[in-house]
Image (cartoon, rainbow, N blue to C red; front, side, top):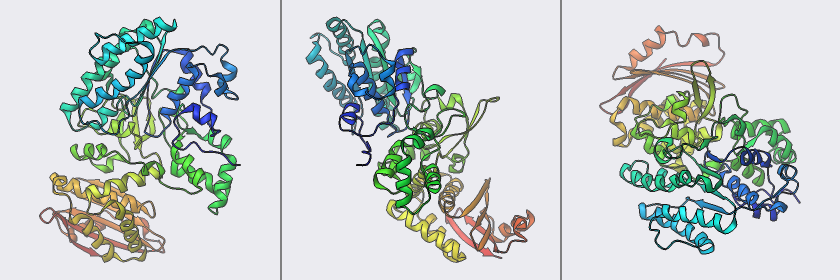
Length: 514
């Protein structure tokens, strides 16, 4: 019988008892629990945070038998049992502060039934304090606190500042208990997608060690290349055979599709565990991480900040920004922390990070997801429309693909087009970047114009887009700047295309081809 892949299984005990495969992270977990007390970890969704918390829970429950054959089995001698509070804030929907209080209340009730409660406590933070105290009094051991998806309510309220402030006030008082009850706590870990603030939610909690960008823990979630080749050798061979590939080709495609997450400078790449396990389980490559839903708050952020999407593929930023919380005008920290961008390069001298898409799954999925919000196309159709666009480009049908471009631009949602020029640049970027997954595209923008080179097996298109000029001027620019010169000796057919975009009609009004 082959491996049982733990797709979507977040409970360590059931995973081990039912014989599902587990990539051994227990040596890292052991280092975590023995060298510090208060931790915070941010990782993208579906990256194994909940499983990590569940593993730590089983460890502190002293369930030695679950760890047979794993690294920690030879490291831990005592297997002592501690009282544990494990809270999960991952609710489907928070409509208001009462929903958040109810969710925490339900979870506290379970523990209060076992350890008792103080009738005069009115707020959830008062109850949290009493519970921690009761647990230690009753067991004689300090308490372990594990909080999963601590930021879920805050993420759902992006764009609604009033609601977000209400959530922050509740959570700040609640998490602040960790500081006041320090003497009663053996270990605490909070996980989430974003860093909503060292400032806001955790301002009283300055004793949390943030390991999100810590080199020692870069692969505590996710799968490293070393683990992939060590634990999944047979699986890669089977995948290669099913897909008519060599072993090397399968490795290369897994890397291109799912690798490339860097959570600190110069660290080895990390593979998305959810996509990898799905690929092995189903024997085919797919956009598995994307199929589980992309948060619409990301689009809200991009739209609200009038973001130039071309920046996204080469965004430069510093530690303070990456480490910062969402403030409203810069979408980059949240997009990075959500896993849609990752660290590509780091300049130590100036503390500058260059960000980009981690891999093909994320790039293609994210751009396809954005397309309906920027251009006239629905979610299901956008892949199909891009395919037809690429077909026209590969056949040399210039009128065909220019008309398609016109239709992408024709029905731009009005509120998106406050800055018409930026809007059309963003649409062109999405279309050509998606086409670039199948052809070769170079794309440059500057104020009022775009120049672009698209290469296929048979054709080279050298294009210049102007805003409120003329197609003739655009063509003249190609000549003056000698954009086509590198292809002078090329055996492929070279087209020079001048295009004008009119801000009156909000569309391409003319193009000429030479």
